[in-house]
Amino acid sequence: MTIMKKIVLIGSGGSGKSTLARKLGDVTQLPVYHLDALHWKPGWVPTPEGEWDRFQRELVQNDKWIIDGNYGRTLDIRLSEADTIIFFDLSRWITTYRIIKRRIMYHGKSRPDLTEGCPEQLDLQFIKWVWNFRKEKRPAIIEKLKNYSKTKKIILLKTPAAADLLITRLKENKPIESSIL
Image (cartoon, rainbow, N blue to C red; front, side, top):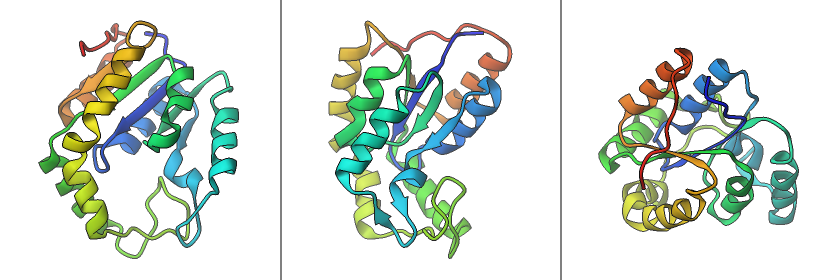
C-alpha cells in the first residue's frame, strides 16, 4: 500500500473533506481529526487563536494522522508536516448543492464531524464563501501547493468519483500518484 502517514484534506465547504477523511481512516487505520469539531466549542464559540495555533502545532507532531479542514491562517502548520495533501477542487455547483443538502439533513442537529452543541446552520456569508471559493481561494491554494509539490504527494480531486477512486485504489493496494499542478 502507498505509505501515507500524515494526510491533510482541504477544499471548499461541501466538497467532501470529512466524508473522505472518515473513509481514509477506515482504510489506513490512521486517526482522523476534523478541525471543525476541534475548533468550535458548543454554541459555535471559536477556540482563541493562540490556543488554536498551539493545539495544531502539537497535533501535527504525532506520527500518524488525517486532518480535514481549511483554516487558512494556520494551513501551513499542517501542510509543512504532512506527507500527503488532498485538495478537493470541485465545481461551485456541487459544493453549493451539498451545503444546502447538508443543512436540510442535519436541521437542528450537529453533524458527526462537528462538536455537539453546534447545530448545522447556513447563512448567506457561508453560501457566498462556498460559491466563490474557486475564484477567491483556489488560486492561492494552488500556488501554495506548487511550493510543496517537490516534497509532498499532492492529490487533486476534481470530481466526487475521483474521491471514490482514491479509496478503491488504496483498498486494492494500488499506487497513488501525485496529481500534476
